[in-house]
Length: 116
Image (cartoon, rainbow, N blue to C red; front, side, top):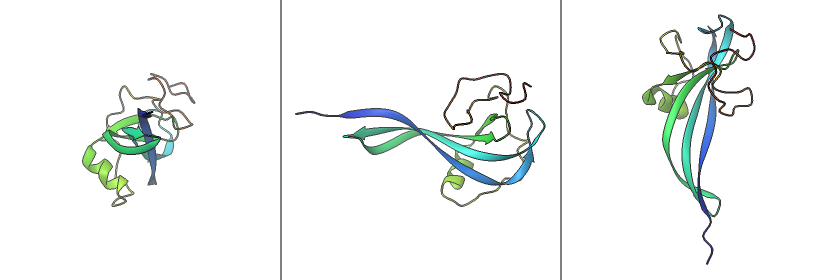
């Protein structure tokens, strides 16, 4: 009997309404909330997920800041789709974390678009 199973990581992006000033490069930008997670699959069917993490990602330079689970869950469930301010979030160490294609990229200290 064959048993095909695996553990993989997944990623979902939720668009946030509004326009903000990027704290990394200073340009006007939109933001998204990215949820990363792991899931277990059996015969290529995802059964359950765990280890959810949420990040706010800017569209201008893909800088990311960790987001608390409560706010991330409300965005995921569709209860909120706006932020009042992103200046309270910590973008240090997450510059350029997510590539333009939505895949997790290695950490970088410089913006991939403007070089700052």
